[in-house]
Length: 421
Image (cartoon, rainbow, N blue to C red):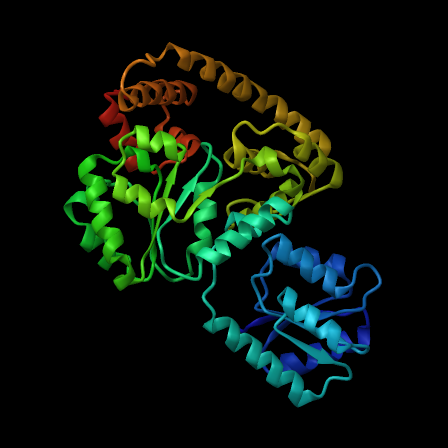
């Protein structure tokens, strides 16, 4: 097993080096940061197992840095605050924000080692949440939404998430998922009617997400009712998502019992344009996520670049922002993404936005007098045929653009009668 990595952040060189020597003697790997700026840079490059963070630093105090990491979804490791002028109020504030403990300087050797050991052990025992959208923002809208989600997290009742297409349903649903437990986005909807109880056994203590409730047949709805009735026995959280409102689901003739159960815990998801002030935090956090997954080299975004992204219109919601961040991190030549980089990529995305507007108008060609299911099938044929043509029949690219598993995509195209060759 590799040595645990500890990041020590303190503006006093003597304290940094003393802590390094002590911790290295105990077998830990230690990195040193002399200020908050250096600590930010290290956190963007890797996730330490523990951070020892001084409160009083010249460029940014430790409490502010702790809040920053928490608001950006980067507080995924235990943090122990340190101060030579600490007060009870400061210690309480730090633990409220998310610090594991508080050490007062001068730090006794045994106290240091005991606290470090306890913090690392505590971190191992905690379920680690996957990244989710509610960790990516601090606006009033997101704070209110977070409170609603936290209230729902107190029990295992099924949840209904409704929001526009690409509003980030999967990232919101990840709020309920805990690391090392099953997570399934159900592509094979027939399993609801053929083996709902087997699904529960497969997902013991995990989460089941159904991406579009309106796609379920009457038989599949009955299976979902049975699955929900037995979900608590297996500690499975059932989350259903839909782009329709409750009235539209009623018109869709959704099973009344199922709708009654789900509507008790229904949440309307916002679109990205409703909380643009969160976009800088979202960009930084998604950038770090991409860097940590080793899929792309991390590049910081300068202030002008973040402002340009915040002012941009986002008809494609979170999906479009995610695609733009990936493109910027791949194509930017400098160590930092600049405003010029953003403007250049925005020009590439503009045809996509114009086509989306044209497609929205093109849907008026769908016969709106036919039943909803048939009208939706007609729209989906237009939608998938557009993306197949746009990707020049590259099905991997189509699956990425429409955010579907390839197996689910092929099944959907077959269902709609779309031939890909």
